[in-house]
Amino acid sequence: MYLGKNIKKIRAIKKLSQSAFAEVFGITRSSIGAYEEGRAEPKLEVIIKIAKYFSISVDSLINSEITVNELSHFHLYDDLIESSSKVKNAELQIQILNIPLVTFEHVAMFGLKESVKEAKHSISLPRQKTGSVAIMINGLLNKQLPKQFANNDIIIVNPNAIKTKEIDCDNKRCLISTKDSIVIGELKAINANKFHMYYADNITVLLKSEINFVLTINCHISNQVVIFDDASEKIKKLEYMVKDLYHRLE
Image (tube, rainbow, N blue to C red; front, side, top):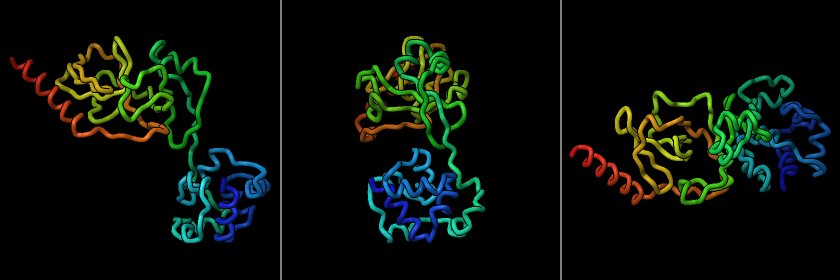
């Protein structure tokens, strides 16, 4: 891990004392010394704040030695850093929100509201809206998931934005709850009361009356390689829609 070495190098280039650096991020001078000497590691929210403040990725800050040339490209707030004791700018603050963490399996069995109410775990994430819920995908087969998703991935939704009356989520991945199941997929309106539902490799027609709720997925956290829909899948969707239209016009 290069975190301590990188913090020390950033301070040296920017001519910041340990005290000045610590004050910017709301921690103690002794903590900075411990980080640089490898005696302690910052909390995740501190790492994220440092990376965001200096416009670098968390991965670069932790896993690679930053060069002087790289530092010269950072968008630093020089005037504010030099007077770090006066830094109060809200734009430099990252809100880390603690949100409930539930499992997909639990939501499918007991419903979203009940799962959140009984949640025993939480996760801290930046830039999330109050009321958001993290759902860990589990208990599903690969054939039940879109290609971009896998078991142990986490999706972030906001139950306060439940859509039932006016459903409008074309081209958006959603958490869709129906009378028979709960899936991750897309809805495209056929008319005011009927939708095409795309999930994994399946396409079906879904009546509005069969929908319990639809929640847009605001964030997807995964270690998987993202594989986007290829042309054959798009053609398959179009063919299905054409056939469906043909049968409805007969």
